[in-house]
Amino acid sequence: MYGRSLKRFEVVVLIFNILLARASLDECPALIPAAVKSSLSNGACPLPIDNASGPWPAAVSPWTHRPECEYTADRTAKYCVYTNSRHGSHGWSLISSPETAADSVRFLDIPFIPSRLNASREADPLYRILDIPGKGKGLVATRRIRPYEELLLDYATIVVDIAFTTNVPSILGYRLLRAAVDRLADPVSVLELGKSNDFAQDDVENVLRTNAFHTSLGGIPHIALYPTVSRINHACKPNAYTRFMEDKLQVSVVSARAIEEGEEITISYIALGQTWEERQNKLRQWGFNCTCSLCTASKAEIAASDARRRHIESLWTQAAQAFQAGKPYHALRFTRQIIKLLPSEDLFPMYAEQYGNMARIYFVLGDMENATKYATMMLETLALQGDIDSVRPEHYEEVWRRFKNGEELKI
Ligand SMILES: *[C@@H]1O[C@H](CO)[C@@H](O)[C@H](O)[C@H]1NC(C)=O
Ligand SMILES: *[C@@H]1O[C@H](CO)[C@@H](O)[C@H](O)[C@H]1NC(C)=O
Ligand SMILES: *[C@@H]1O[C@H](CO)[C@@H](O)[C@H](O)[C@H]1NC(C)=O
Ligand SMILES: *[C@@H]1O[C@H](CO)[C@@H](O)[C@H](O)[C@H]1NC(C)=O
Image 1 (tube, helix red, strand yellow):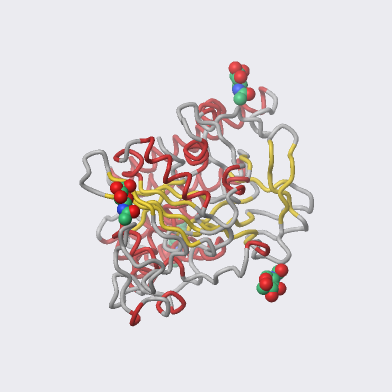
Image 2: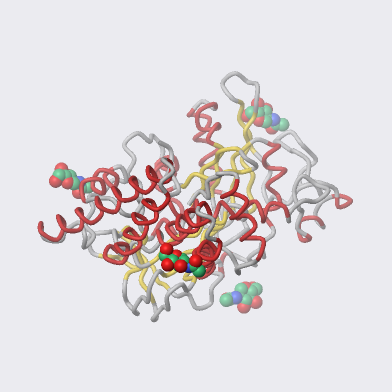
């Protein structure tokens, strides 16, 4: 696989993306930010451009560099590298089709940085990048961080259409990958990242294969690299989690509990709730053996933790089966047991999901009072985690609509 897949957490947010999407319709294919619009001739919609579009730099493009392009092997399509080296914190390079690039101009609606010298947008960041014994670099808190505090905001710095990686001959592709990095405000921030892929033949390819996440641009699969988030090491009971904002190509990292000054900030690279062996196998694909405290605990502790995790997994299966078999009271009992077990394994991201399941079961039972109670608990958890900005009536409507139609909440 090329890149990491987003895990459990992503899905919780997807429900509400529909609501967000409705708000961003405009006469152009995408809402064009004012700063970008003023750089377009006559405030027109951005047009697809490639390396032959000219004259350069015409007042047609918010990109800071002239695109460079390569044909697919069958010469039916072109992929180009588009860069705005002042976007976000390190600049942004996109390798995609001219059409996707034109639609993606809206992502530039972020205050441009004045220069690379103050590329760090935070005057007083809550973290420092330090050497961590045995783990290379990592992030360490510079002061005490409260639960659910946003500790950093990272911008996609390199975004690549997955089709490019398969359709363009690799030797030509490497040229564009290299250009994508060289044109950034801070190429080193990308080139220094971990490289642990055995199949990559090029440094940039290796960085992407090791660190990039799957994302989607205009419905087309892409991978995205977030350089600061890539610095955060894995833990099985992490103290922070990532919140992807695909609609902005940003990701924020939020504390899951209080983090002390000097403590390392960690996230989980894999879905939570897996057993020791599953964790080792999954993490080996990342190029390292799991050495977090839960992986190196005593045999007895690992066995106890594994047993609890297997129990949660099995209750989950039983709850789903009971629900599908029309036995909501059984499903209710299993789900209650899951909720009781979650604190023992610090499985905080699963709360919203399980509250959602409770709400659905009560909804099916016609107990709207309890359904509302659990839907509220789910929405309040999502709001606390920052996945939604506040709990609004339309969130409930969306939840009931999905329950009624038997649609997944995707949580
Ligand atoms: C644009 O890129 C293509 C593919 O690399 C190349 O064949 C063509 O000569 C380039 N055109 C210009 C005007 O640079
Ligand atoms: C960033 O650069 C601008 C313009 O050079 C300057 O006014 C501002 O003080 C700088 N910010 C920081 C945090 O250094
Ligand atoms: C991980 O552990 C295995 C088996 O103990 C060992 O062969 C391998 O070299 C280790 N890998 C790393 C990256 O430390
Ligand atoms: C909610 O569910 C509990 C447990 O099933 C039940 O005892 C209670 O009566 C329900 N509450 C309401 C308001 O219906």
